[in-house]
Length: 411
Image 1 (tube, one colour):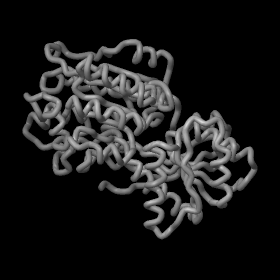
Image 2: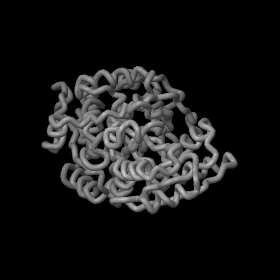
Image 3: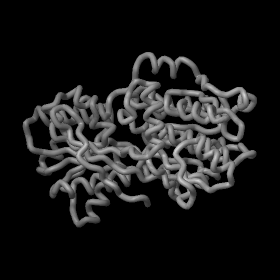
Image 4: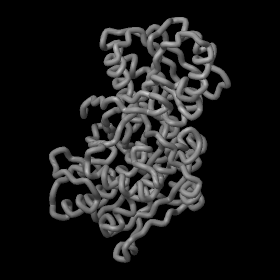
């Protein structure tokens, strides 16, 4: 499910040019709206970033093929965050100040999104992200930031639900010391204690260490039956290798977010070390026509199934939703005016639509619409956050096998 999607040819296509060519009918060629695709093509998020960029382009092409939004074509300008806040800040400044983009889409990792937010907000440019930290919601004072991934708090609720389903009694947590890692484990602790449970140990570790033996020993000394992780792939790989090599508590189970417990982890450690790991990730709106449309286009463009990259469905939805908001805001295409129409095209009382052309026709007919996304039903809350469902998958014989879907319900 979590196959690496970066091919050399596609990565070269997306990163070798700043402005990405998007096919557009001649009728919409006289007016252009610039969109910044700011994605993790390299670094810890590199497994997903190329596909995220491609999904934005696919959605822009879908909008342009339907005559554009308010008769305006979408032009995509792409930059790589390198999954680094420092690199992302420089890339965001280029997009906003040099390329003059009017919306930025697709930041991945909370540290990156939090670093970019002050730049986009100061410029009055909306920012759409796939990050989880609660601070993204609370720091968005101007309602210009939109989250298409579950919050870390909701991930924590899903971890708690899964731990209860599996009958664990003595959980411990290990968190990477950043907003995302801490948000995941703190969300779990809050949900777990609300159930009447308690943690036997919790450890926060610093990034980019060669070894985590001392932190691991603190956890193992408490004799937990499961460790809930707020982690990334590189540190997770080291921690699990050191645990396995220690021979201590061989029956210990692990609950790990899907961006760290993926096929790359299995490749690095092998099926014996990773056997029984519980991987948890948000999942797409797999039964929706919007997901089917996206999946077909994504497979044609990349040669990969849509399920290989849950974040690509999110960035596709960003572009489609923005295009519909442009149509709803027509003729005023100022970024803040469009931003103010995002909830109006995700109205739960409106007619369900599953693509741009369908939604555009309904808007032109004077209807209220509810865009049902490929990544989730969206249902944007007061913070601009969504609530997708989650997958409970278990690594079995080197394969990531989904066992069930966990739904927290739309909040």
